[in-house]
Image (cartoon, rainbow, N blue to C red; front, side, top):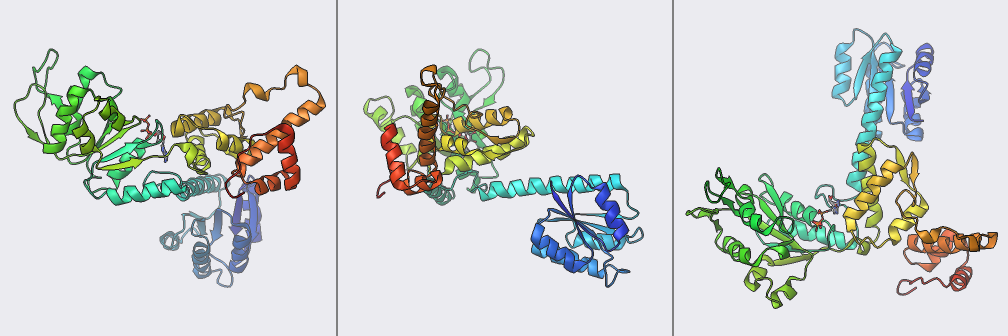
Length: 453
Ligand SMILES: Nc1ncnc2c1ncn2[C@@H]1O[C@H](COP(=O)(O)OP(=O)(O)OP(=O)(O)O)[C@@H](O)[C@H]1O
């Protein structure tokens, strides 16, 4: 139940409001002092405040003082002020001081309910947004606070204002486009377009016209002059994803554009100057491709002025949980599902999975879990982590078998949650370290401890 603080010195009105707002846990205060102590103790998200409080009940001075004090102590609280029906100016003054809304007497339970409900909704959205921001780097769009991601964020910040051509190296789904976009957003080009093109997903014959555009009549079907992605990115940034899949013939044309900053549309005779920053990405080994003569060496050096490796999700410590929480908030809101968080077994499973599809895989798993989970917490089953081996076979279907299976699983999960620290694992399980080592021996568990443990 949400907590709602009602500040009014009139006991009759207190009673009436409490009755109309029975779906909330109503806290009552008769003056400023009581209001502040209740605010400190219960941290209600919404306050209904009558401005006519003692010792100056005929005026609004004490109420306005209370408003200021509430907002100083708790700036995100939504305060709805209640005024007499001829006190319009006072109500406006209160809003100017930071009140969320005002209500003029006489009281109407239905109207008050609507205003209070809206205030709670807004408070909730704002607090979710704050949470997302606190999860890390919403400004750069890069969520995560592991050491590798901090380094990456720093690198992005440093190279963004330069015109350097960066090559992002990372597995599929690690966020290469997110990083390219962050570089663009933090550059002087941020007001101009960010255009992304995936060289692997466009047939070789179409890629040239997609990139360079074509003149009317350049080929059958070229009914009108069409600009390519390079021209569309004028003034901004062009992101060439999967650059390793760029056909060899087209590589020469791309190199010319990168060196001379001019392009020619297909079928055109005119050179067009373009001002575009280029960021490339790949999950292939370009150096090896150069040795095997599948990628032009001169182009490789041109696009790799700065090589930025992007770590796979499994190497980002607790980021998997931070990202999971971020996607949970996002999809919970999108699908209007009230899920509180992850159960311990879900968190352990998230932590121990190897994430071959990286953040995209995590995103998809959380999305379907949010849709599947009724309410409460997301479990590892909601995330689709129940494997065949989790089912108890008939052969071992006796109490000892069941207990042993549960025991060894609990050890593995606690170990993952404790990030491989044996003392912490024992603590989580509520057993001593020798007992833990005994269990590890007994079940032949292959737990790799952290160095120095
Ligand atoms: N650090 C991050 N914070 C928030 N969302 C992220 C992050 N990294 C990736 N994502 C999300 O994960 C998904 C995959 O990211 P993205 O498309 O940038 O990966 P990619 O490496 O370019 O993949 P591919 O190589 O398959 O094109 C996107 O929906 C993106 O928004």
